[in-house]
Image (cartoon, rainbow, N blue to C red; front, side):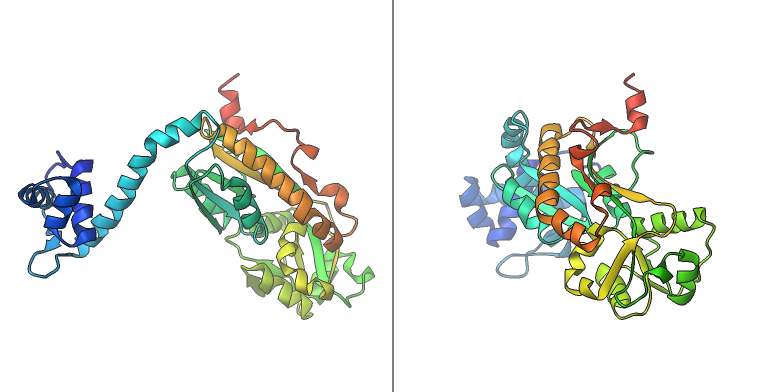
Length: 338
C-alpha cells in the first residue's frame, strides 16, 4: 500500500457524510462543497487505500464492506477530534471528557450505577467494563482503559500510580450445616469436602493457589468455576467448600443463608484492591474517583460484608482508614524520583 499522505480529517468527514446520507449531492450540500469536489475526495481516498469504498452501481450509494468499517472508524475519530478543545479546558478542572474504566469482577451492582451517578456531571462519555485482572492490566497499559480498579499486583510495572481502595481477608466458606469444629483443620477438611476452586486464570484463583503451595498442601483438582454464583451455588448445595473474600460474597447474598463463613483455618492472608492509573494522567479525577469508590464501599458494601463474615470487620480496611489519603507510586517508578 502506498504512503497515506493526504489522509486527513477533511477526507474522513466527506466520506462519513456520504455514507450517512447515501448521496454525494446531499453530502456536498451539508459540507458547503460542490458535488465534483466530494466525488474527487472519495476517489482520492480510494486511490490511497487501493480499495473501493463506495458501490457506485447501487442506489442509493452504498459503502462496501471496507467502506462500512472506515465509516464507523471515521465517525469515532471525528467525534473525538471535536471534543479535544473541551477536553483540554476540562483537564485543569480535574475532569475528563472521555473516561474508560475497568473494574474487578467482584464490584457489580450497586457499585457501577452509584459511581456513574456521582460522575455524570463531569463526564460526557463514560464506559465501564469488568473482567479478569490480567485483562484490566493489559487494557491500562495498552491505553484502551484510562483507569482500573483491580486486585492484580502492579509492582512490576513502571509508570503507574496505585491508590489503595480496600484490603480484605480470605475466608473459608462451607455448607451451613457443616460442623464448625470439623472445619478447623484445613488439610482434613478438604479430604471430606472437595475444594471448589476459582478459575486458574483469575487473580483470586492464583492468589489462593499460591497460598496453598506455601502451606505445602496438594489438593486434587475436581471443581473449578469462574463466577461467584457458581462457586457459592456449589457450596450452598453441600458439594464442597471454598476459599473466598467478603467482597466476592456480596453478589451472592440470596444464598448466603445456606453457607457458613469462617476465618481461614491456617496462616492468614488477604488481597488488596487498588485504583490504578498511568503516571501524570487524570490525577485529580482519579483521586476523586478513589474517594467516591471508598465511600460507596463503606456505605453500601461494608455492612453486608461484615454480616456475611462476622468477626472479620477489623481486617476489612477501606481506603484511608488504613493507608492514608496519599496515593503511592509503584516502587519501580518511585525509585526513579528519589
